[in-house]
Length: 304
Image 1: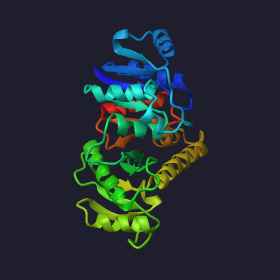
Image 2: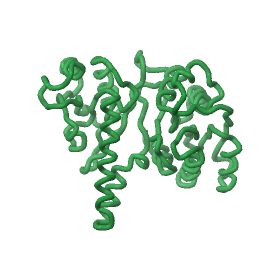
Image 3: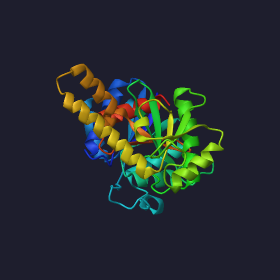
Image 4: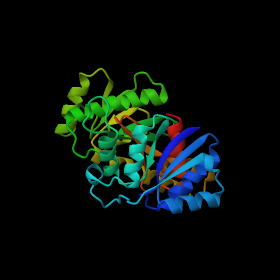
């Protein structure tokens, strides 16, 4: 059995939606075992109603829940009985678990991952990495996507290295092409952060191809794009909304193409973003995610 830990709290659609996603995953994936962390009575009730065999899951009740309005540092100082803290603590101790899924407070999940699990390679903080689909069927790793709003140039180099390692592990590409997000292809274009990061990356052992622009993200020009968390988050959500807008404009004019665009651009159904640099695998599900997001994230973890 493949074990995955699921923090049921924090999604925009509520805890029930995430629990239903866990139930769907158990029904769809025969060799899956899920540890649920959240409101015990609710979880058990929904699992019982769904007729899930008790050998396929375990439930750990929480008496505290971290909201998106809470200070992320709360999980560092206290909140030991929160669903997120309980799940993170369990992940650290359980080497058999593939990883943890959570749609909760992104900042708290990052701080909790650092303080309760730990970082690799002497990092000061993890980086949030999302996979962006292209029309050709390939993927581009975009990082950071919201964890580091004001990184240094050396941080961007580190993001690139982590992204390249992840891409090689995930897709088998030995020397993935790495670019830095900027406002022009020329190395002189950009702000002081991107110009300095470009200089540092030019001396790295990465397969660095230089600056890339927003319109390069989905054309297959590079495999990994490094940027600050502010720009990355804005870009990610802009791509999502643009893709869904085009899909909705098609309506029933071309059902086949509409369905394909829905599949490619609906990030609530594509899965989640990885926190790279954590000693264990932690996946941040889309806050607006639904039950399909959970199933996609479970499959994502099983492919790791």
